[in-house]
Image (cartoon, rainbow, N blue to C red; front, side, top):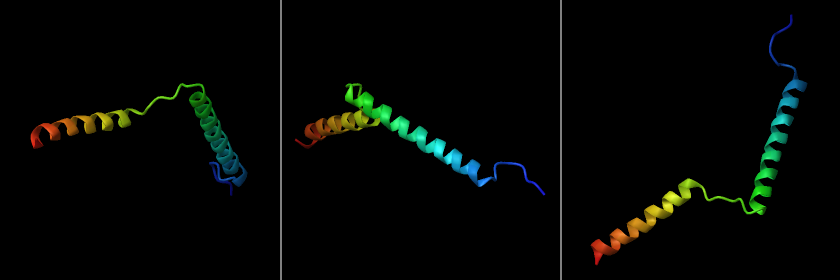
Length: 64
């Protein structure tokens, strides 16, 4: 009996290989962008920095 689907081990291996290659290419392109100076700070880092600054000012105001 034959089953439908990609149960062939070579197909799964090829799919995994394609995923690994796509991941490597994504990492390479990110490194190249960063070396060209196109690096951007993630939004969550900016939000945390802003919260710390505002929290520090509020602590300074209320605790002094």
